[in-house]
Image (tube, rainbow, N blue to C red; front, side, top):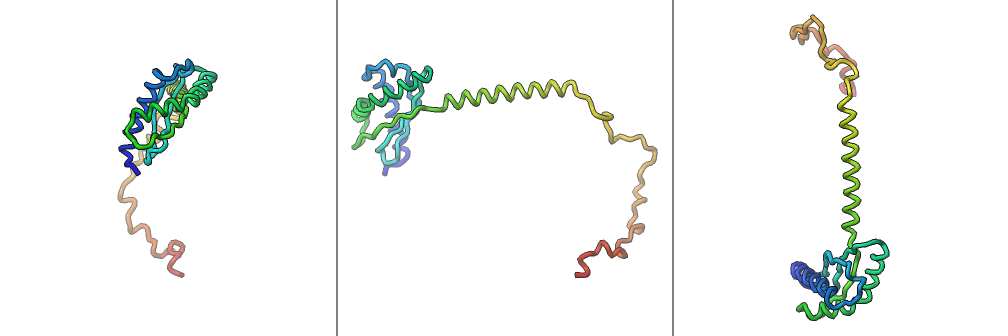
Length: 167
């Protein structure tokens, strides 16, 4: 079992080797629009997952997936020549969904910004429902602290307040 740091270094090396091999060794025109974005290797160094993106529509994505599947043997051979491990890892190609997720997130942010602008426009023309300060009264009577003396309020005689005493 190799340590994760070694697996990460090997994954970066495999990413570079596969990207170079796609340009040099694979003579398929369907792989010209492929970009290798990431690679992950298991800790036992036996399996490598390579993430890629394709510039184009759905047909280009499907063609690129078929081309990578067809060129998997040549690419594994190149990886075996250029890395220093006892066993060459198997390669698995996975379409990277980060650009799709990023475009969805950008659309959500645009929608939120549009809604914020609508709320700001509504708030700019809004008026108070009542007075500007409804708590500001014009009562001439001021409250005196002496009005609330403890002597005036006798709670000890009130049986309703002491419900737990009879239990």
